[in-house]
Length: 149
Image: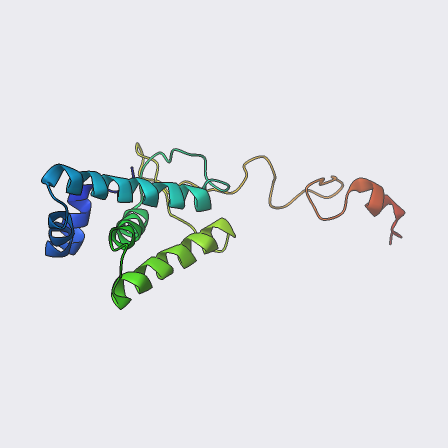
């Protein structure tokens, strides 16, 4: 889970408690909050799952914030305020940029607090002269047809 009910209450305070009170009993309110958090996690995983191995080793603070924004939007199922809708749209826009490799989550390794690089480890960024790199746009068969200097 990227966020908890306590995270939502800490971030948004009384508005989450008021949403919880809309239900007949506290158990249904807590279940609605947990469902919204689960929905937010699944939506986030849908965007970042193609780029990062899931589950993440730890949850970066920006992802926790986005999970809270998405869950809050899900809790305002009838008529979200303009601020709630805008925060949701901003979170989704960022997640789409992450999925397109235009933004990074800054995931830290738990033991060393070092930011984990999400670039593929098996392909070098530069190659020594005289080597053939198969990860480019053109394969060797196409490159062999091109004139040499």
